[in-house]
Length: 150
Ligand code: NI
Image (cartoon, rainbow, N blue to C red; front, side, top):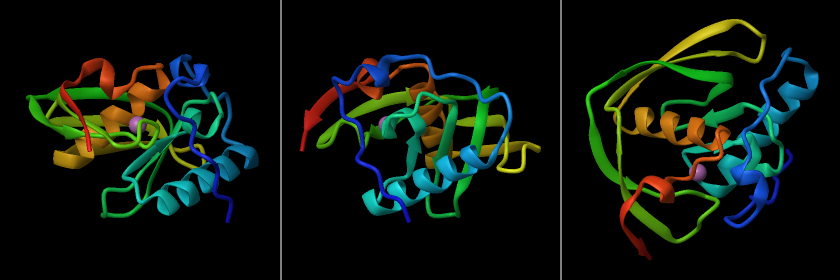
């Protein structure tokens, strides 16, 4: 169990474009474990590696349907539009309405380096898009309307 401190808004790493993973090694599997541990401890639905200080294209998502681990994720299909409230573990207490695709298909590598496709609608689609944005240095507050502090 390795729970990391989550990097907060203002840290430059959150604005960097994260580096692609050339090969899924034991170090990447350890990073996936650390992300999952940190996500659970924080009670979040998704976490991207830059949020624990690692500028690599690795994310985990868990919207209550089991943990999804993604290395080098890319959105390969988008459909529809959906606007809903969103927050971020790196911007605690702040929420806003963000418009996202209603359905996405994400292509990525799993922890064994195998190509996988994950299809998501609803909260899963939202979480996938939010976490992949983190890998490009994009934060939900860049896209949100009606931002408020709770
Ligand atoms: Ni976030």
